[in-house]
Image (cartoon, rainbow over all chains, first blue to last red; front, side):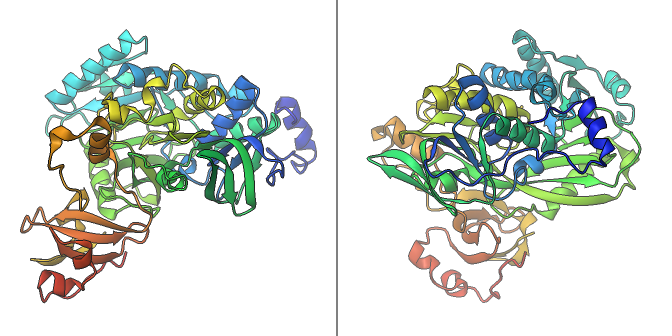
Length: 417
Length: 110
């Protein structure tokens, strides 16, 4: 596959950009099957395939996607990347992911527009202040950058924010992770797809998995809308639909699916050059390179698979936005969309072997999967290739719900659920 | 936005209600006899269907009473409203009959 560079840009400019190679091969399933089949062509599935090829030399891999690449949650999130998680297990996993993001554009030869613009988490009451300071200390003990900011420092870092004491939930300070930021979400999926395809991975789009075939309790392949596909091992990375797909192998999961929505405003000139999050008034906002404000809030309280959210959630979110930034009071909202997130009882993911032989599962990322994309793929590839978890995902097994070793990250998840 | 037909107060906006998760989950009658796997099943495992789902709701800002709802998780259409303690058989009756109310039968059109 041709390398993207200044020279390829000049060369293709000469022919009016009519002759660029396809970014990845669009395959049909191979008749003799694959060593590994990944169900789900989102960011995590594509990253898994890429690291299987790169780190473990397993290139006879297919990624099977029901619709088109990046058309699920990868294309529906608010693009925030951070690693400010409280517990050691989460901090290590998300920090690995952030480190991979830092070199990802170079590694994939694809500009993912990673911007380490800093993520602010605001505190609005004494409980928030104590939790924030505790998290700063926990992060520093884990060698992850984090700092506590007073309300005045918050104002200095993000000048348009309102730190008046005469509001219902005044800002009392906040935590800042400077290495955190945003990336172009589609580019992450496309970059991994292109790099995986270049290493021999088959990418099969518009192909729905309808069943998981087992013989003597072992998985031997998947039934799809393009026929049976033989597989040595199968990895499920189906985000909101994890329990539906796992159900095809009679596997029950401790997850519930909920709609989570985001929205963007009309584009405006650069006005906010960081990410601001607030758990208390509950909104998170950043500005895209195109100028739109990108905003998210909480999940719908009830389970659902309809890819839209409730209007009253948006209403609440807009109230929160105006509490923090009265400057946005006349900004018009452009569009809104919803994705389906699968939420675990402890708000931490499951990256694990399953009781079914040759079947692996990566799910339960809840509202925060995008930031974990490279790290998730890295450890899941290891889990599939070796049949054992990587040190970074050993704590994220299915068995934690039986042993009771839960990783309670509801605070760091930043979204009410 | 859902329009939920509270069996006692009639149809009201979703914002008046609280969601209580999957219905028909009974607390173990003899807790000390349960092993870890059985506890995990009770505490953490839920059916998560793409389709009809039976769940508990409470009219928090109204009569504060609990009841069961059967809702389609893709269309959000409310298929049935029936009382707590109702069984699947009760659920198969029409709403008015099950809850003994003359309120018009409501579903969500969203």
